[in-house]
Image (cartoon, rainbow, N blue to C red):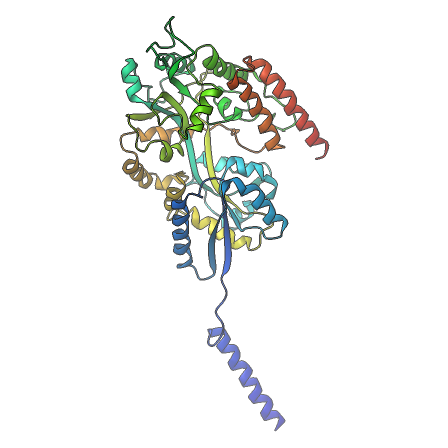
Length: 456
């Protein structure tokens, strides 16, 4: 009897195992949730929130094992909220879209995705080379490329026409379009209240109503990266131990900027910027700036509902005979303290896949980092921003500032503050000598580096 009972029990156990293996009667597997922290860059506008929620629905309806959720954090709170989540043991699985600067700001918190790329034998050749480079550091790869924001000159065609000045050349091989020519053209486009331009002996610099040029939406590193220094947008040596912010090329670039404000008068100073900011307008939209140097992300903000005709042109050659056009970039990063990092990696791959990356970049306003979708994205650009030279956007990608003006350096935030404080002295007119500004800033940067390396 005991033998028969044992056989019956064994059969029942075996049957239950079969049922479990086949899913019969078993509870469905719970999905792994991947929380995507949004707020370090773009992505917090109401329209973007709706679009991200729709993207989450698309992913969740096609995946049985992973569920994604976008956590939208006000931009002004991103640092405190992110650090609080880390310290509380509740790290999000993904963070993004991250600019190069926020990757640098929290550099030590990111997972190195190199092992994931190698394990999947993931082919990166479809990504633009600069997009891949911007994620790679000596000790880690911070993520797969999502989008790029190349830079170029937005120009007001009506202002050029009224001044009788030729538009900036769009030919990237035309070396006549250099910083000397930019200065010459910008002065012709700058007008006082009496209609005199900045080359006229009777020009009144106290009553300027139209400026020829503006690059006020960037910091010191971004403003000077174009000038051809050995380390381009990085104020330190390659080993990050020696400050080189006072290099000759940066001094030349900053003096060009200072003279443009206080001697040649084709750039607005701090008071002009403050008045504009207080009225809630950008430098280009009111139609009182001939040329505005900015990035692709300005398209959505600056090229809608204009009262004038506009186009875009390459940034000019620098005095070293090189063209460097700074680039911003976005990616998604995985916090190294996050749970479910493998699932986060799967989501990162999905967001940057050829099938999805265009939709993602449409939300964030970036140029998709994959070459294979360029024609698809181009058609959307033509519909959204008709009449501009789209080749300028894509060709500018090849002139990456490497090392990039936002990439990681030790004590990134402290050094940024030291440099940007120097830039503010120039814009305010408190100090107009670029050599002095950069000599002082360099000493401060060196002190910061010395203190950092003393403990690392």
